[in-house]
Length: 339
Length: 261
Image (cartoon, rainbow over all chains, first blue to last red; front, side, top):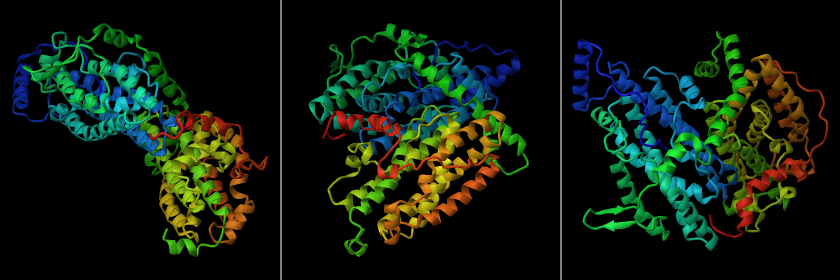
């Protein structure tokens, strides 16, 4: 899963500190213009580094927090097949979190520091995960819409200028595409099921449609970082371009399910060859972003509770590793380093 | 299993599916417990590991339930068996249904059961029930990994800090009373062993005891001395916890009977 189009609140890129920096920065931009990948040991402007750390960390946090709304249905999945598929999906998200934290670590920040920022409420994650999963159909809707939106956002990141992030995204995109198909298949089964199942599917679509459109972030006119991120090839398409692409792909999928989208203004524009939606309620987005959504407290509360409850376990692992440092106990040592 | 292999099986009647359900239900119930950890474990690595073990266990349960349904011959498939039986018709050992508690209690429960499943599946690879032997061979590979994980953590917690040692020891004291059921044969175990479908539990007992004693020693944990009460989860007499676990697991199938998911 994914983070919404990224954060417009960080430090503005600064002008180079010296003439030497200016020259390095010029060469750096030339490499990017030639579509070369930037690797961890290469020189990079501090603002590029900070933008990437912020973006990759938000993405990693989103994967980890995103385990919670879907994890909410693992113990209640309706069949054993659905249960194992859902566990595997949530595992994939945890795995994505791991590669992304590792990618961020190549920029000189530790996983521990990033997690501290998340738990202290200083880091963002995608606001979509602050919505509740109320019925089984929400698991279908998340796979179809949320992972579908994630794919639109992430495919261009496979060509991101920063090598470790781009490479992590290749694998992540493959898995997301699988998740999206699984989610759609749940929706199809419900939409073709009994009246109660159909209602469940429609209700889930009603609740997830608008938050999914908001995942692409504020409209281009409001998004301050787009231009610089595009020059650096961290971002390749604007929020509105990606959102439109998602709408154009998803509306026919809803029609195939014979479910209705909760937007009376939705129409096909023949001249533009696009589906045009009604206005997005950005005040809701801002409310959720500021921490007042339906589950912000629960999601962060669950992460904090797990972290606190796990403290004695991590301390035990570290103490054991200290006592047995000379022994070949790869697992314990790896663990001690991770904390 | 081929028809010829099926007909070559000793006539075990209802005992046979009942025995397979014991194995299936133990994996299913333990897997369901581990599902509760997903998203809440002490670190990301442990979250993924517990989820992977849950996946393996539920995978084993699916194969075993399908097999039990086939030999039972009443047309029940895996989901009917998993979602439409009530607690007295579940035959898992009572240890598997015990609540997760803290990470230490989960690890102690897991290590005690991993060691048991490892020895049991090892013996079952020679079962006269060929299909069961095949499933055991697959499960055995998974159990080796599960044991490596749970035993590794048992040792780290036992020999970690004073707090982790105390927590692990306390969990061991609380859960040890459920282990007698794992290694003491009842009439069904004896009948299955006499037909070559199951191993004599005495064999499993000796290996399990040795494995656990060695792990506890390395973990600097003290083995509790007595087994307090003869639990009969494998005959369908459970602790209070199983009904709640099933209530949650079976909720959708019970609320919307007979629909396709």
